[in-house]
Image (cartoon, rainbow, N blue to C red; front, side, top):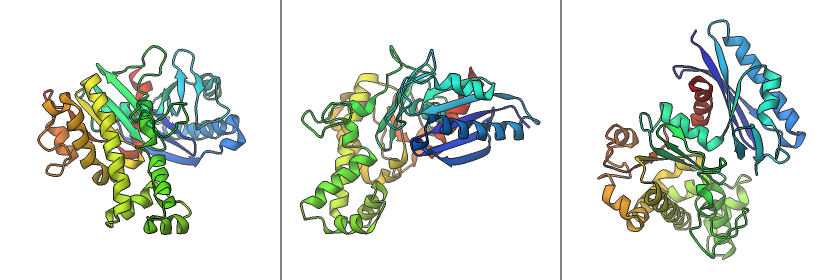
Length: 339
C-alpha cells in the first residue's frame, strides 16, 4: 500500500472524507450528513471519528502524511481560525485547525473549499500541468480561487478570489454580502431558482409553476430538465445565467489574463444550457478573450478533454472541471502531501 493522506470536504449540508494515496488513487470515501444544528463540536467529532477509521484501516500498508480540510468560508491561514462562514453558523472566530489537530494528534491543513477544488483540478483534473489558472465554482453561490506559479494566491488576508461578489448589475438584486447585483445573484443554483420563482409570479410560466408545486425539492436541476425539454421560460433563465456568467468571466479574463479558467460545481451539469450565451457574452465584452479564444471554445467539436490536450499558452482556455464533486477531496488531500 502507498503512503496516503486524508482529504475532507466540509459543507453546510454534506461532509465527505477520503483516503487518497500520494499518487492520486482514491482508496476509500465516506459520506455523512452535516448536523449543523447540533453544533460544531458534534460535526468535528463525527469528522474525526471517520478520519480515525480511515487512518487505522490504511496505515498498516502505508504512511499517513496528514489531513487537508476544505471548508466554506474565510480562513486565517496563519492561525487556522475560521473567520466567517455563511454555511456554518456558530463557527466564526473558532480555532478549527487546532481543535482537529488536538483530536487527531496529527498535522492538519485548513483551506477554503474553492481553493481546495482548484488544487484538485490542477493535480489530477482539467488544469494538470497548468501553473496559472483560476477556478470558478457554481453552487449555492459562486466560489473562486486563483493559482499563480503553481500556488494559491491568497491576497493580503486570504480573501482573494471572491468572484461571486463582483458586481454585474449595479442596481440589481440585493445580496447577502450587503451589495446589489453580485454575480452569484444571477449565475448560481440559488439564482436559477430565484429567477424561476420571479417568472412564476408573473403568471406566465405555467410549466415552471407546475414543477414548483409538485417538486418538493424545486431546484436548478429540475429547471434545467425543463429547459432541455424545450420549455422557453426555463431556457430564458439559463440564457440569463450564461450572459451573467459571461460578464463575470470577461472581467476575470481582462484582469488576470491567465492560461486557463476551470468552471466546476454542481450547476456545471447544465453546461449545454448556459455555455453558448456565456461564450458569446465573453467574446463581446473581453478584448483579451476575443484575441485569444480557441476555435471551438464551447467544446462541441472536440470535447473538454481534447481542448485541454490542445492547450497552448497562446489561447485562453475556459473549460469544465473534470473531477466533479471530488475535486475538493483530491485538492484537500494534496495539501499535506505537497507541504
